[in-house]
Length: 67
Image (cartoon, rainbow, N blue to C red):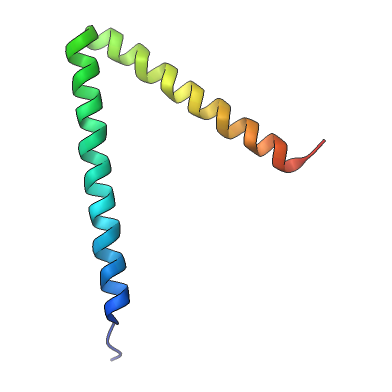
């Protein structure tokens, strides 16, 4: 059985740390929005953020496909 190299394990640890830090930031942002505006305010805020992200992604895909 081949051994997995150190580079592989460093990448696994790096990806795990990135996911962990991203999760902490996401839940902190959700907590702050919930505390500041309540449930419906946080829901509206994240809806607007997700619609904006979708619009940006759609716009970049439209540019890539050309006229």
